[in-house]
Length: 171
Image 1 (cartoon, helix red, strand yellow):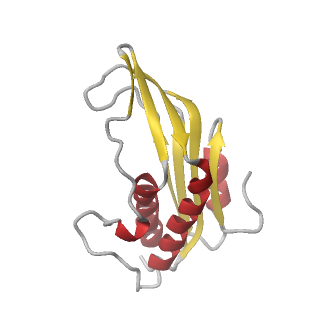
Image 2 (cartoon, rainbow, N blue to C red):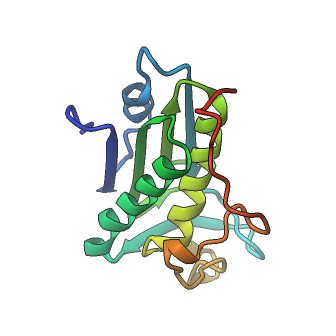
Image 3 (cartoon, one colour):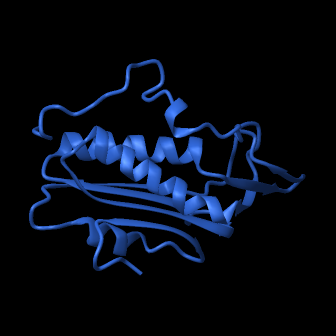
């Protein structure tokens, strides 16, 4: 359920993610930009064309604190950001359904797009959540699984210096 007294909505959810609710919650009268990223379970992975389902597991005690660090860092880098929702699903995620949602709102599009991209990249690199892929020939932990990094060690965007919005979010 969306928070009523906070501009940050973080969560680990077993079951269908509230994508539409998160999008509506992020929109405010002072926000001209709302950016939504929905990472959906797909029927293929690198080297596999017949993925039939995904199962996500997490180190649950660490997820929300690490999501909070991601949200805090996004707000530090882009002060014009108003609302952030970072929600990840655990358990079985059928093909086609959302596994992760990142929603960011701000007065102007540049801050919302930049912060939204940072949030999903930082979430994937720093939050302890892993996926098990199942296909006709068996199952295996995701080929793209990587070691988690500390947010302070995250190079973002890859190959570039750390962007900080000094324009006040005008775009």
